[in-house]
Length: 152
Image 1 (tube, rainbow, N blue to C red):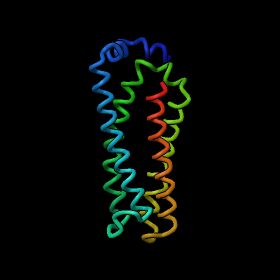
Image 2 (cartoon, rainbow, N blue to C red):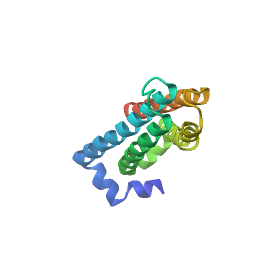
Image 3 (cartoon, rainbow, N blue to C red):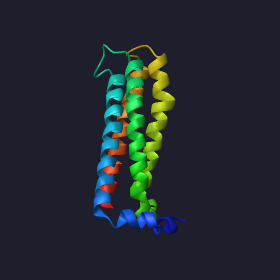
Image 4 (cartoon, helix red, strand yellow):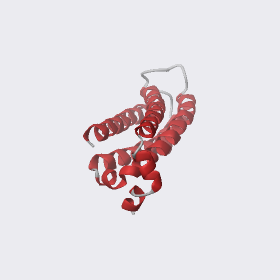
């Protein structure tokens, strides 16, 4: 199935054009920046390192909107960049690690951290621990993404 995807007209159209690949890569980086910037801001707030005067719930609300926008851009461009090299990328352990970390980071953010931000006392241990976990997972994701690009 991945070979069929890789042999499609769309895959050849993207893969044979340096301009299209460069444009998609640039947009992917913009999406990545929105995702990582909002995730970092929110997690540093949960840690109590920045924006202490602003309620964590307010920061998570705003950060989640930016994160979702960046995620939409990243997923769309990432899927288009994946198509010309579907078989190779899916077999790459670093690429699989990147996707696993993305799933973990999103699960942590939307299933755990939002709940903690809205229900925990400001500056609580739960907020600080979830912030630390978030910084760790999002940083690992960024490193995996960079490693995939460099080592592919």
